[in-house]
Amino acid sequence: MAAGAVVATALLVLAAAAAAVSGLPAINVTAMVFEEGYAPLFGQDNILRSADGRTVSLLLDRSTGSGFISSSMYQHGFFSASIKLPSDYTAGVVVAFYTSNGDVFEKRHDELDFEFLGNIRGKPWRVQTNVYGNGSVSRGREERYVLPFDPTTEFHRYSILWTAAAVAFYVDDVPVREVRRSAAMGGDFPSKPMSLYATVWDASTWATSGGRYRVNYRYGPFVASFTDLALLGCRADPIRMVAGGGRQASCAADEEALRASDVAVMTVEKQQAMRRFREQNMVYSYCYDTLRYPAALPECDVVESERRRFKDSGHLRFALRRRGPRRSSRGTAAGRAAAAAAARAAAASRAAADLAAAAKKRAADM
Image: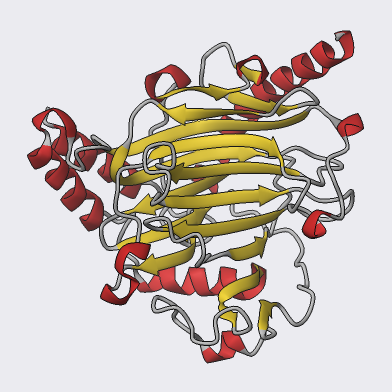
């Protein structure tokens, strides 16, 4: 089967799932085992894998953090993983799930980030997204959210969609941010092939209250677990800036299939779900940070009702009110799909718990 047909088939699988609790079609990702698409990046002794290779735990301890990288670089694609974050005191800890080409294009790299920022006990993890293109680190495009669930008790899926036209970030199949390419963005829109990374590391100097609270290794090792690993896209040559091995035509087919898929099309229902998530969970946006950017950057879609909720610093004026747990929909098709996903997540949680127990035993024995 041609590469374009493979991607198109995979995308049909994504679009065919039953409705999720959010009311949107669930993204039923076909996951792979670690060795099929990834390799250790650093801290190899702190990378633990389940027996079936489908769950990977990254550890941060006094000696080092850890991380893994995709075996190939991709020119656009859909990158996804279900992640369970460390619990208890996690100040200074950063767990990252992102695409980048910084190791190839050091001074003009592209990057798409999910960064999970740890906190002191009793305070929630925060999630930060960012977009860099062509080394535009001086024009950070950060947005920050508080999640509507506890990301330490079970797995939740985080996904990055990157096409030639737009970037979208998803949390549990709900789009939480979209950046559409415009001519005014110029090189600030990511355009070069990127790898997928997952890391856990010590960011004591900035991650929690600007560095006020640092990593306390008495609460370690800090374990972040990943499962449902998925890579959809065209493998690419980062130097020649074209698809490697004479695969230009198939990459064009992959891109066309990706952009036409339900995953990439931002329907009215997705836009509404995204607006609700942002209203309920966003606590900072660079688009409303007029102290930093007196004139909003060109891709910013300034929503007046949304803007009024933020200070000139881009931070939320008032603390968010957290809602109670969602009601179950187990009797519906969406509920049955969610139950099946929960069963898979439970199996991954058991594997992650075994890996975490092994990590703590190893730390105690050292």
